[in-house]
Structures are given as C-alpha cells and as structure tokens.
Length: 205
Image (tube, rainbow, N blue to C red):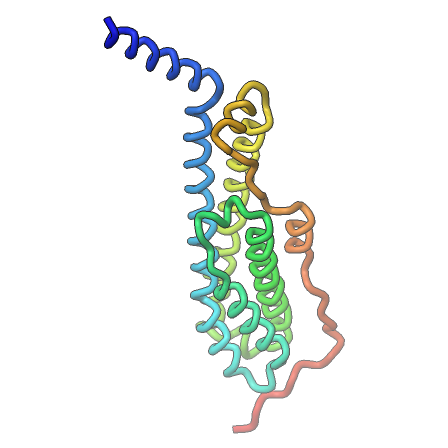
C-alpha cells in the first residue's frame, strides 16, 4: 500500500511540474545552449579566416597599416575571451564577449571597404576567395545569432510568465542575457571611408 502511495505521489509531482513548465524549461534551456554553440562555431570560423586574410592583404603595397592593425587587435581580443556555459547566465560576461565580436565585425567591415581602393588586391584570386568565405561566414553568423535571439526570447518569456515563473523561482531559473538591440544596430552600420584619397601606388619591381 505504501508503494502505491509513493508512486501516486511521484505521478502527482510529475504532473504538477509538467503543468508549471518544468519540462519546458529543460527543453528551452537545451535549445538555447544548442543555438549558442552554433553562434560560437561561426565566430570561430570567422576568426580562423582572419590570419590568411591579413597575410594576403599585407602583400598589397602600402596598404593602410592602421586598418590591418585594428583587425589583428580585434581578433586577438575576441579570441582571448574565455567562453564557458556560465557565460549564458552572466550578463556582464556576455556583454563583454558581444562587444569584442562587434569590434571584430566593424574592423573586418572597414578592411573590406578600404580594399576597394586597391585594384590589384581586388583582382587577387586568393583575396577574392577569402572575401567570399568571409561574406558567407558573416551570413551564417547572422542566422545563428537570430536563432539564438529567438531561443532566448522563448526561454525568458517562460521564466517571466505565470505560473511557470513560480517554477523558475523554485528551481532558480533566471532570464538569460541576449544580444542588445543597440549592438545589432551598430554592427549593421558600415564604416565611413574617404574614397577621395587616391589609392596607394604599386611598389616598383
């Protein structure tokens, strides 16, 4: 009889937890982790392209060293930040990582714009191939970020809604940080480059 009562208690507890969103928390938490992993994968793919891109651009005579330096520094900063599972629940750490990736995005964007002033570089097959790879990776980053944003929104709505918010409080489920709207707007703004300045002359052979 006691065994029956225990099983009934277990079943009742399972029904209560399910009705209060416990299972949904598990599902959405895993969903956000999966989406975040894809964001990290695409950021890493981009970081891996940068050394070859910089090496190719260095071969162009008198290319703007300041532009190259900023790309190298931005990549170093972005890859130096250690990302752990706890980052998803730490707004400050998340923002720091977000800002570093944003700086690399802007540095690479400026590099692409400045390269338009160098015909020889634009005709370089290696540079063109790397540029295509970079553009494809940036598109994948956008898709991955959008999926993560949606996953976090669903999770946070569940965390704040009644009665699932009671389950959140009971099991210490807190809202997760997300990509800031301000940061998205900054990333989408192309850098300003003065094309009135003549392109650097090619080095004499």
